[in-house]
Structures are given as C-alpha cells and as structure tokens.
Image 1 (cartoon, rainbow, N blue to C red):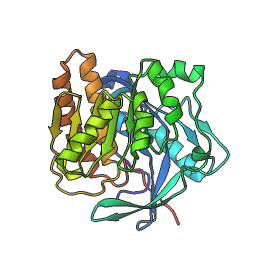
Image 2: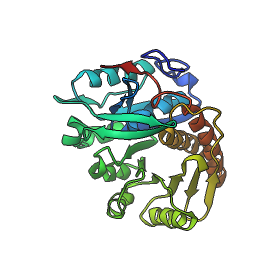
Image 3: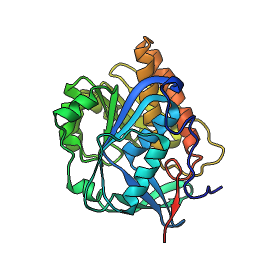
Length: 304
C-alpha cells in the first residue's frame, strides 16, 4: 500500500534520545545523498548509500547517527535535508554548494529496483570532500564511518582509518579489481554484492581479506549473505518476506544493522565469532522488514 507523500518509517522519537538508544554505537555516513526518482510512480524518495545508513541506524537504535557530505542548493537537496532533520540525523559537518543535488531515476520490476539514469552525484560528484584537522577531530567521536563506491571519498579513507575509527565500505557489485586494490588497504569492514558460484564467492571474499579488510561480507540477495574473517565463513540465510514492496535499500539496511549490532556486541565484550553470528541474524531480520517499505525508507514526495 502506498503511503502519503512525506510518510516514512516510525522512530521511537524523531529527534533521538540517548536514553532510548538500544545500541551504544555512534555511526557516521560519509558520502552520498540523492533523491531516487521512481518514474513509474512520479514519486521521489530520499536515498543514497550513506543517507540510507543514517536513517536505518536511527531506526535500529543507536546513540548517534550522523551524515557528512555535500548537498546541492536545489529543491531536491532541500527535501533530503528536511527529511534528515525530521528523523533526527546530525548534520553538523554538511555543506551546501551552488549546484544540482544528486539524483537517480529508478523503476521497479517484480519488486526489484532497476536504475535507469543518474546525474553522477550532481555537484557532489564535481567537488570532492577533503577532510581537514577539524573534520578529523569531529570524526574521532564515532565508532564506525561508512562510505561506498559512489561517494567520491576514496582519497580520504586513509585519514579516517589513521584516527583509529573503523572504516566500513560498500563496493557494491560493480567495483573493478583495480578499484578493490586501491581502496581495501583503507577499509576495516568491506561489503559487496556478489552473484558468482561458491568457489568464486570464497575467492572474492579471500581477495578482500588479503587486500586489508578485517571482515568481508557478500550480500547474496534472496540467498542471504556470507561473511569471512580470514578464518571462518559465516553464512546467514535471508529471512523470508511475506510481501516484497521494494528492495531499494535492502543491502544498505543489512550493512547498517550488522555494523551497529557487531560494534555494540564487541564493545560489550562478546566473543568475536558469537558477535558476528548474532549480528548477522539480527541484520537479516532487519533487512527483511525494510523490504516492506517504499523507497529506501519512505518519505516519498510526488513530482511532475
């Protein structure tokens, strides 16, 4: 059922509340924000790998969820900013630039998203975010900083990792071997989508570990996901979904809830293998719930 424009998922409190946080985790999304324009519905939704992570972390229950990146100064940018303010995402280190905000044009086929076009991130794609000492001082408060291969942040990841903050990165399903080699040394937790066979999957995850990642996770769609820590392959089946509304953001929700759950469990002293297994199980359940929403996390707005 389609919600009214502007409706999204419910939160315990829109502005957030430390006392209500279920997980003792501070997480930062560093990189992309877009509007996903569903051409078949003439409805746009806020999105982007990092914005999705922030919204999902808020829903999953963290101490702090923050976004750091560039917005354009058009109506699309204003709408994304408005939604993030409404759900309580911290944006102290964001900037607005003179130019078009990022957008992607999307349609759905049997509940699965199909990307039709995008504007290369808009002004954000033309203006890399260069971290200075004040940015890095801000970043040090977080447990995890997440980015991805459409964020234009690759050159800055090493600076973040050098602070001791864990770096998570989504390589999606279209990163080249050369790109992996370039980025992996600056990544702690590596994620990707992978459709190959079992032998190819294991080789791909091993490559990610050999490249520098502590944990490597491959999303397998309806088959769930597989995580490798250099010693053990952890397999997590997908949680059955009664009715798929939209798979937009399903991978991002899995990444988010795993990062939050695993980080929280490790901080509480849980043994690593148990933390991985329990966090994966919780993440699979959370991702299945997200597939019942339109857009990545709702808040649709009609356009002409």
